[in-house]
Amino acid sequence: MTILVTSRSFSTGSADLVGRLRAAGHAVERGPATHDLDALRGPLGRATGWIAGTGPITEAHLDAAPRLRVIARYGVGVDAVDRAAAARRGIVVTNTPGANSAAVADHTLALILAAVRGVVRGNERVRAGDWSGWRSRELATATVGIIGLGRIGREVVARLSGFGCEVVAHDPYLPEADFAALGVRRATIDEIARECDVVSLHAPGGGTVIDAAWLARSDAPVVVVNTARGDLVDEAALAAALRSGRVSAYAADTLREEGGAGGGPLLAPDLRERVIITPHVAAQTVEAIDRMGAAAVADLLAVLDGRTPANLVAYG
Ligand SMILES: NC(=O)C1=CN([C@@H]2O[C@H](COP(=O)(O)OP(=O)(O)OC[C@H]3O[C@@H](n4cnc5c(N)ncnc54)[C@H](O)[C@@H]3O)[C@@H](O)[C@H]2O)C=CC1
Ligand SMILES: O=C(O)C(=O)COP(=O)(O)O
Image (tube, rainbow, N blue to C red; front, side, top):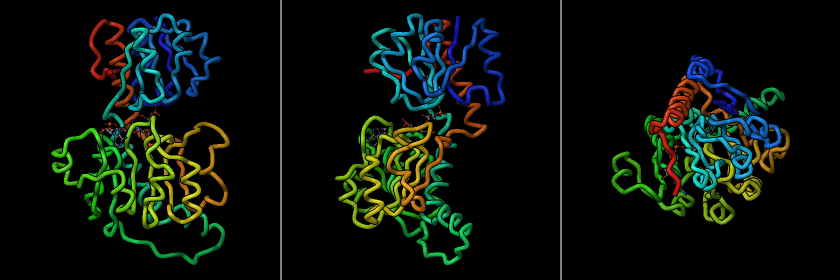
């Protein structure tokens, strides 16, 4: 059978994953991480399995893939996969929960601290000969709000415990007991807006959480951090809030439009000192790449062998 691989980090780990797929009797074809449909039509026509990155997988992709039986996401988020269309065709979707949580949590802390302390601004100013500096606050005096208390959100909470800050969290799908067990106060999305100095997003993509109305409710200037998905924020509203001072900094590993020039309103030159964007690399540690690869290949082979995969993404 032919396996299509579009994940950009698939062969960059320590294991020979292509060799493993070939040893199981499969041919491997590579395709672009952007999932450009025209470029993928040929390989999709042949593919029985697809090891996919974060690019969109639409009904049109599936229409072009009559033999496809399994989409194994090399990563966690399945927001870009049309799961209803996959379910209608009997195509199984799997992902790799937990495989990149530590990597993304580390990166989140890097972004929180960089935004709170002005690391990127300082680097730029020194290169321009400006050593005048500024004053920051210690993280211990901050209230940090976590939106989405899942695998990554919890790893962020664990790391924040070393900083002495108060941590509150919003997650509509978790029972009260889970918040207490993690030592965080449960909060509504409005309370997060009113009380937090730093807000970090860890919910799945697919709906806007930080919009103009939320931003209007926040009192003091807030630092917003997003290592989840670009569509969780209204980027135009956020850019306006950065200009008005309601948001003091935005640090993210993701944008609504990724992969190429452009990038949208947050990359405007006048916001350069207060906006930090990394190119979707939070999960790209050598350790996480190995864990994601092992999990994605194991589940893809399980489905093709007629076994139940470890990480089946339920739909409906
Ligand atoms: N930057 C990167 O490279 C990476 C980004 N991600 C993104 O991070 C997201 C979270 O990953 P995990 O923690 O592993 O997933 P998870 O499924 O363990 O946790 C997500 C949590 O969000 C909660 N949630 C759902 N809707 C919500 C809402 N509207 N408001 C608040 N909470 C909500 C869920 O109840 C769940 O507890 C992924 O869906 C993915 O989009 C994940 C890995 C790497
Ligand atoms: O796991 C996720 O959802 C990510 O965003 C990271 O995925 P990637 O390693 O870029 O395919």
